[in-house]
Image (cartoon, rainbow, N blue to C red; front, side, top):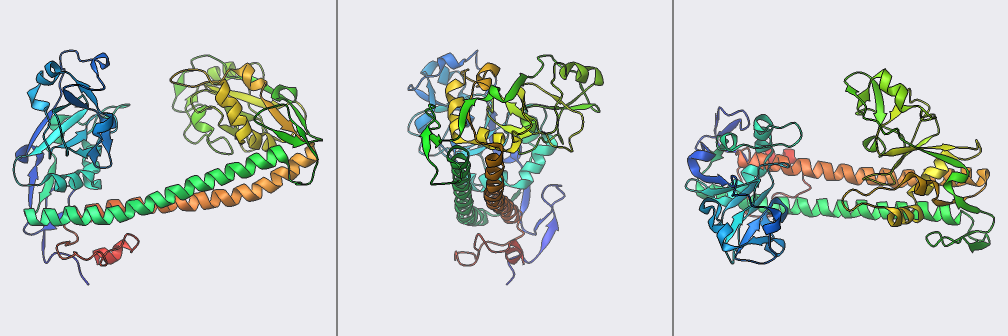
Amino acid sequence: MTMAYPSYRPSKVEWLGSLPQHWGVRRIKETSYLKARVGWKGLTSDEFMYSGFAYLVTGTDFRAKFIDWSDCYCVDRDRYDDDPFIQLENGDLLITKDGTIGKLAIVIDLEKPACLNSGIFVVRPIKAYTTSYLYWVLSSPNFTHFCDLGSYGSTIQHLYQNVFENFSFPIPPIDEQTAIANFLDRETGKIDALVEEQKRLVELLKEKRQAVISHAVTKGLNPNVPMKASGVEWLGDVPQHWEVSPLKRVWSVTDCKHVTAEFVDDGVPLASIRECQAKFIDLSAAKQTTDEFYEVLIEGGRKPQSGDLIFTRNATVGAVSQVAEWHSNFAMGQDVCLLRKTSVEQSSDFLQYVLEATSTTQQLDVLMIGSTFKRVNVEEIRNLRVPFPSPTEQAEIVQYLDDKVGTFDDLIAEAERAVGLLRERRAALTSAAITGKIDVRNLASEKLVSASAPLETVLA
């Protein structure tokens, strides 16, 4: 069963390829009213109101294709009247142009006046297309490719109006636009539901993984062992023969060197927060510094060694990674500290599991300071109360957890791969529909295309 159009022609547009013979190609500026807020006489966040004459839409109000009016800030009438060009109407399409460019929302259910904050374009059809169709065009990887070619900014991305207005897109007849939009609403809805299922599965697996770790490192493996009160609220009862003491009793905790290092393209890697998100330090994308700064950064016993742990104490507080035997010279960057055992009998793997346990994360939650970026002081890390079974029992618990956690990690990775494949399919299906690689006019039955069917079947 073929789902292609009878004939095609070159579009002569890089990000579109060939299109059905009877489709046109037009630019945004030829078919649309396009405006954004420029300036606005010094409007500041102090003027945002929870209720008022007019809604003030920002990118945070975009919710699953539409605007969530319930959380939208407002402004008074004078501010609304400042710029009539960005006063919104039902049926407008909004697109973010700064930061995360390309977020989309359609304006519906507008019950009172509304206008735009900075960072958003309003796109209003004048002729040739419907808003629901353009929504899918701008949701496609074809538009993403265009943005990659036309956006600027090293840290914050921008989509400038003189770039966006020259975006060329396919123009099928209106009835075909409606069919495409309806098809994609239905089919991507199926895919999105499957993605949500997989994401819920990932969260459930992570919760179970955490529970297994927390139980093993606080209760041990023997369910019949006598227990005692740990004296620590978050730990509860622990095996009677275990010790519970501050971390600093058997592990040293050394803060990073607080200097501003010089970064170079080819030098010594630095392990900061980003490098501490897996079991072992990942230096593959680490910033690098000079040999001179490296010598400064490792002063005072700060040179990482095999078996050390690098612990994050700012922003993503509590992430911990181990220094492996294969790691060559590197230094600590900012916002981390180095944990080193003071007794060779202690297990790095065991402490790493302890630091991932709920009892430890709860202690850290109480200790964290800072309103925007949370952090924990080094002395508080030294005083974390942790359980210490015998070295033999530590090894047994590590062996048990390596097996159990490895199984959970495999299942989580499988579910995350499924999410990735579903998202790839969604993007491919969107691109195929808006460029006419599939003819959706006769796909009225939902049974013809399923979210899990191979895309080659659809494109055959």
